[in-house]
Image 1: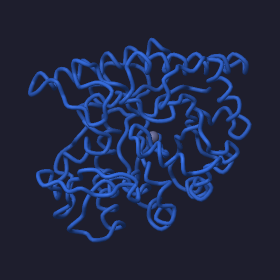
Image 2: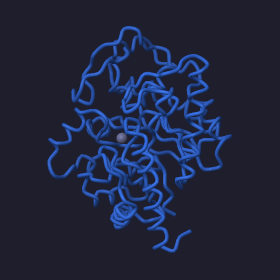
Image 3: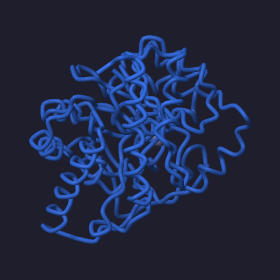
Length: 341
Ligand code: ZN
């Protein structure tokens, strides 16, 4: 009960990539980079296990960015002639690859990574992929001319990849959909259907991470404009509750999402974010426990998985690991209160 896990990414070691940056440049290349990524994953698994995390991730040590890491295995994309586009409804600008032809998965992308993890940990393993709507919202498109059609093309490719990851030993496959709270109409019209297409046929646990965004100043500024209560999920949660996706990961530490909205996710596992990834101080285990107890008023403990608010890739490594330890200790406090092992 109250098994702990992470939203996804962890800081990379400074010898592998430039620290405290999104889109950080690799500091190795060729065979050395491949070896470095594997060593970083090993260190990351060991530290999660030592901290007491129950469902471990690879910390996304092997990918450059949470969306683009997957796209490199697909045809139909031009990475050479990137174009500046407005992302998340023009919240910020980014250099995006361009869709120039049919999207096809030409080779397995993360299969070797999940098999490597499977050999080196006995803990359940979670693997993250970008969700179809978030991928669409992070690209320029000259071919499909329809966000919905493009999303389903990616959903097909994601499904092939997810089946490979499951076969390689993933216990949980999570799709990251930070775009979900920006386009509630599209979530209703095709977003959930595309997500379910990506997860079709999987027998392992499936999860979706939704999010107000971190790591980019424009995200933090946007959140300042949303008022005292963030109610965007009021539309999205009932749709997710009816979906075939088993788990929902969201931010609850220092969040303005009214906690009672969790009640709209009836029947789902909730990965409750109990660690803020945007501040400079470590939560105490007692603060983590308090967030878990509050969430338990709206979600039964057997459906709660204490987690981080979001990925931790751009954080200082020492701080991130202290937060991971606080997460595990805080969950242990509540487990003891419940008399759970
Ligand atoms: Zn997030």
